[in-house]
Image 1 (tube, rainbow, N blue to C red):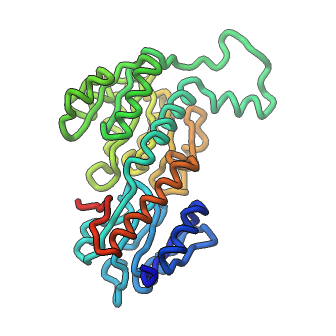
Image 2 (tube, rainbow, N blue to C red):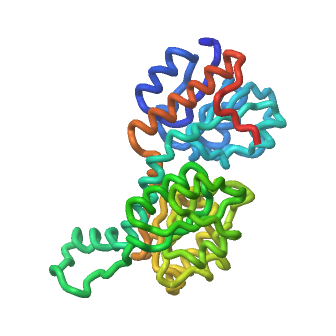
Length: 324
């Protein structure tokens, strides 16, 4: 397997990089800066496999680049909307991802953002650090109560279900959700979750809405001005899914005009660029894509990506082959 020449587009945990060095003829991006689109095109010509991350923008013409060598895109992450799956498959390029291992950490972060924005922790910390806090008073920075509130979840897969478990059993929250397919009763029974018929119904019924749907053309701007308009003015939007599922312009307008009370965001449409209007708002908690950012989780993702590639170059079906 040493003959497999592979490129890793960003720095990975050291234990994974050591493992890869033992298995592949590997090149690392030691600068840990985004590769240019020309770099990506060249990688498709010069390597048997590329290990991209969600921050890598793969140009549309890379899949059909002249003298293409790449046979595998072993993605570091569960989401793969940065990879054009039909184009990859048409070119005979296999794609793998790393599902499951980041479920708990992403669910933890979603709840953290929910609590932070509801209780105005970001605002409070900024006030305290700036020396403007003048002490406790009865009407200072009143937030929203989380316990007993209704949580709406858009996308009830592994992560959505994990958030529901935390919210219901930890905070006594009522769970409603939208999912494209019907969820089995034995799953909904774990949290008493109620499946509703549309995104709009969930948005209207909820005090908090947490997004856990995949990115891509089908879900781009699923949260648009119309969806935001049916939310309560006291409600909050949480996004740890993909930035492009939210129309950021519409969200900024809703946050500015009081259409909703606040938002907790970990992902953005044009990462790492975040709209200045969003940064300026006090009723938003912003995290720099930290959903899977624990040592154990990032190592587990790395091991899974490497195992996928090892299986592929051994002539086996990778455990996490993306088929659709």
